[in-house]
Amino acid sequence: MIDLRSDTVTKPIEEMRKAMYEAEVGDDVYGEDPTVLKLEATAAEMLGKEAALFVTSGTQGNQVAVLTHTRPGEEVLVEDNAHIFFYEVGAMAALAGVQTRPLPGVRGMVPVHRMEQAIRGEDIHFPPTRLICLENTHNRAGGAVIPLDYMQEVRHLANRYGVSIHLDGARLFNAVVASGVSAKEYASTVDSVQICLSKGLGAPVGSLLVGTKDFILRARKWRKALGGGMRQAGVIAAPGLIALTKMVDRLAEDHANAKKLASGIANISALDVNPDMVDTNIIIVDVKSWEEATGRLANDFLLRLKEKGVLATSFGGSLIRFVTHLNVSSVQIDEALQVVQEVAGGR
Ligand SMILES: *Cc1c(COP(=O)(O)O)cnc(C)c1O
Image (cartoon, rainbow, N blue to C red; front, side):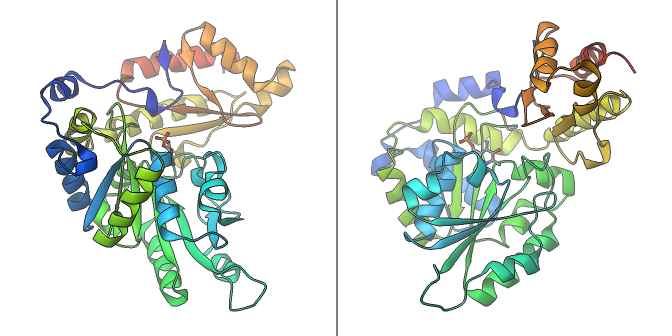
C-alpha cells in the first residue's frame, strides 16, 4: 500500500526506536524526567520562547492553550476551516466554555479588516474577544503557508485590542522549510504555539505547547486536569528530540513529492488541482468532473484507488486529499500517479 492519507501514518525510524530504548527517564509529573525536560528546552529554544510543555497530541496542546488563554464566556476568533474549530470535537465549547466566532478565510487567512470588525467593543451585551487562533501551515487550505507579514499584521491588530494569539503550528516546520522564514520569526508574532512531532517529523507520539514561563506554568496545570500528566514520558520524548533536531530539513523531499504528484494529476482531464497552490505536503484534488462523467461519488474514487494499492482520504464533497511524507518515496509517487491515472480513466 502507498499510504497518502496523512503524514500521521509515519512510523518512527530506527534511530528513534533506539533512543526510546535508551532514554533516561523519571517521573515527569514531579518534573524529574530528564528527556522530557530536554525536549521542552529544545522546543522553547527553537521557537525563541521561554518555556514549553510536552503534551499527548496536537489537540491536547491546542485545547490546553485555549483553556490557559481564556475564561468561560469569552469569544475566540477562528478561521472557519481551522483545525481547532473544525476537527477538535467542539472542545473549545465543551471544555473551555468559550464562544467561537468563525470567520471566512482565503487560503486559511481571514482578511485583517474583517477580523478587526469582529473584535467586540465594550457593550453590556457582548462577550469580550480574548483570543485569535491562527494555523500555519493550514491543513484545510491544502497545506498553505501563511506568510509572515500577515501574521505580523494580525499581531499589530491584537496588540491594539489587547487580544492574545495562539498559533496551531501542527505543521509549522513545513512552513519554515517551504518559506525560509525561521520558526522563531513566525513564533515572535504570537503568544503561544503548538507544534506536532507526530506528523511529518515522524515521531510516534506527542506535541509541544510553547509560550512564556508563566503561561506554561498555568498550562501545565490544565494538562494535568485533562489527564495529560505523564510519568516516565522520556520514552516517548526521546524520539521527539530526534524529530526536532534531525527531521526538519528532509520535509523538503515531501514538498517536492507533493509538487510532482500534483503536477501529474493536473494533466488528468477528469481531475482538478492547481500545482501552484501546493505549498507544502498536502494536495487537495477535486474529482467533480469524474463524478459527473461516471455518475459515481468521490468515495468510489477512493475505493478504486485502494483496490489498486493507493490510499487517500475524503475531504468533503468531491474533494479528496493526498499527503506526502517520510514513508513514501519519489518512486512510489510515480506509482501512485500511475494508479490515479488508471482510476480517473487516463488523460
Ligand atoms: C493534526 C492536526 C492537529 C491535531 O493533532 P493531533 O495530534 O492529531 O491531535 C491540530 N492542528 C492541525 C492543523 C493538524 O493538522
